[in-house]
Length: 301
Image 1 (cartoon, rainbow, N blue to C red):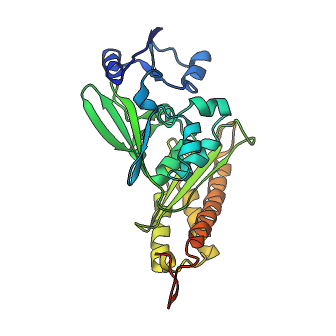
Image 2: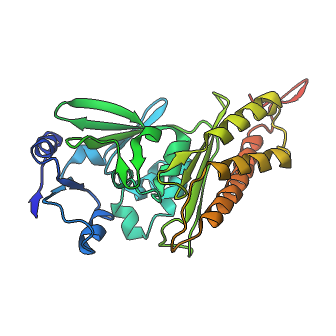
Image 3: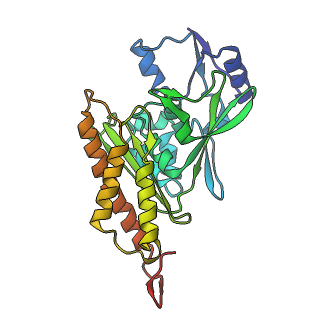
């Protein structure tokens, strides 16, 4: 195995073009485990740790530009306001040591269905900036996952940046595991309210061959909130609406039976998480309505 250690982004792209099979490594929290267990034996290993711009992040007017090597601990400490769902997901990743090394870019590159960042990225709305010596392209995160531990990157591409929409409303993340910490998700769920566009996005992890959005559930909830005037009134959601949303989220799953949980359990757990996170996010949204009143009553818009 040959070890490549580019000092600049340009050197990394050139090395990847010359050695398309080279496996990039930043934190190494996934790659080194696979190598240590002899699940992967690449001909070339490319260390991206010296490339400064991959560890940088920037908050813009509408989005956060997150370098692919920014560690989870930075998201928790510095970006919890702008990216609350992703910060909550980051809290559940491994141990403090892993959170200081692991990154969203690494999670995306591994493309495991159980990756903790994926549901939050799907719910928030994110784009992956991939680059090669041929140029740059942007991939919506929902199009990035192509199969179990497979992604849409070309052989000569590397992940440079993830562009994530700043939160304009409450976001939540929930995860089920076989213990309370240091655990791979049995299943996970994230929900984000987008009041400006009056839409909802829901991301599911570890309950299908790829992370995915619960699109039918999103469409149902978008229509129900609009038709019922809930965005403007801030009224409590009826239990029947939450139950229907939960059932549609369960129906979006295509899980398997494995050592961590059965397919039936995963479907059930996703439904429970969907119902609970909807309750948490909507109550948080309702709290922003307090004090905003007109002659007709409470106004959230």
